Each structure stands twice: as C-alpha cells, then as structure tokens.
Amino acid sequence: MSQSKKWDFLYYELSRFIHDFIKTWNRHFAHPFNWKYDGKKLYGQAVRRLVTHILIENKHMELSFLSGQIELILNLKEVSMAYSDFKTLEQVHKKLGITIQDANGLYTHIEPVKLTNWFVETMEMAYPKAIRINTESARQALIVDNVFMELNRHIHISFFLHNTFNVDDSKGLTGNPDGIISQSRNQLYITCPVIVLVEAKKSDLGSGLGQCIAEMEGARIFNEREGNSISPVYGVVTDGVLWQFLTLQDAVVTIDSYLYSFEDGSKIVGILHSFILET
Image 1: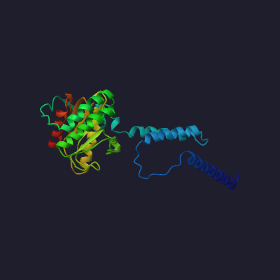
Image 2: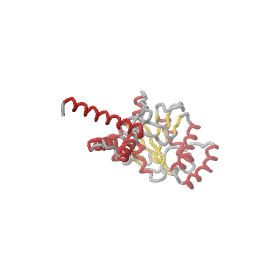
Image 3: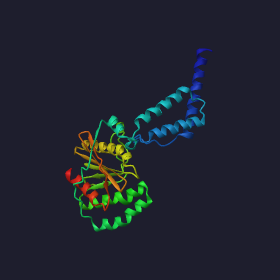
Image 4: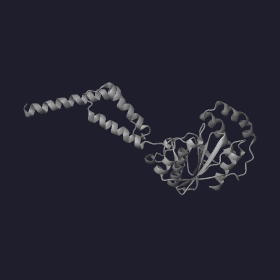
C-alpha cells in the first residue's frame, strides 16, 4: 500500500470511529453539562456508565478501555467517601488522625431545664407515636426535631435538618448530618460557629459514633476556615429514647459511655443548653 493510500485509509478509519463515537454519545450519554458539578455520587455514575458501555456492546471497546474504566471506578471508590462511610472508631482514627477516649457520666450534674407547656403537650403525643412507628425518620421528626425547637425557646440558636454540609472531599467530610446546631442566629444557611452535630439512629447507638465524629471534625474545620475556631465541638447520637454525648477538642474525641434517658426531655435539653453556654 502506498503512503498516500495508507493515510487515506487511516483518515477514513479515524473519521468512522469519531462518527460512531458521536452517534453512541448522542444516543446514550448526551446531557447538558453542569460546570459547577461538585463530584458528588461520581462513583455510582462511573459504574453505571461502564455498565451502559458493556450493554450496548460497542465494537470499538477494547480491553485497554475496559481496564481504564475499572481503574477509574476503583480510584473513585477509594476517595469518594462521605460522613456515613465512617462506620467504625478505628476507621475514624486512621483516616482522620483523631484519638478516641471514653469517660462516664460527664453530664450527669447538669440541671434539667424548666420545659415549656408547648413541649410537654407536644411530647405527650409525639413521643409514644415515634416509639410505635419505630423508624429512624419518625424518631428524628417526632422527638429529636422537637428537642431542637424546645432548645431554641431557651436560647438563641439556628438549627438545620439534613442540610448539605460538605467540608473536605479529600477526607470524606461530606454529606447531610441529621442535625446541626449553630450559635449563629442565621437560619437561612449554615454559618459558624457550628457547635453540635446530631445523628439519629433507630437502634444501636454505637453504629452512629464514627459518622458523628466525622461530622464533628467537619464542623471543626468549617469553623476554623470561617475564622471562628471554637473548642470543643459537641456530638450527639440518639435513638430518641437514649442519648449519648461526645466532645472533640485538640484532635481528641471523648465519648461519654453513660446513656442518658429521654424521660420528659428536660435533662436532654439542659445538656444541649449547657453546650451552647460553654462555647
């Protein structure tokens, strides 16, 4: 084959490949581009893209392409963590460099607050309803969220429920905490200082400790970046009935192993109230 014919052949093959690619893209993958995309859920999208590629059986798909896609997925799996991916205390220690220690009964001395009539009347119906429904979302909505409302009647705060709180992608400090309490009065968006992070669980409070600590570390970094590096940052893991409290100070988390019972809620609100006052 002459040099001229060889280049014509390569040009034809390249043109055909490009046209096939464009046709495949327009048919299966075309979408408006969002240049402000933050990479959230990128791992899942990469997996779905590879599956789609395999299903359409693109004849130009070579082993090198498949290998590259699998490598991409594995890399994304390694880095695309979120608060909820911190499952164990050991994981928190290794990935975030936080030392973890325990104590017992740190807040047993805190005096209960005098509850408002609104809270007493509301919880007479809401508390047993949450226990009977017995789902994580019911316990949060009917118990935890009402505790936030009562706390706000005793002291000026802002609180946020399931709001996006992305602080550091590289550390996996992204996601939506069940509850965030800030000392700021700005209820429009999260502003520093963020003081308390709350995780609501249906049962097994221990399963939420790692996630809560990751969120506390996210709050610490957030406050520091905003020029309000308060200490300590507090955490709460609760199923509505039992409440466990944590503190983060100087890269050390102290977990109070004592489980505080909700009872009428006055002790729980009192402890949260003390967190705000001590900050």
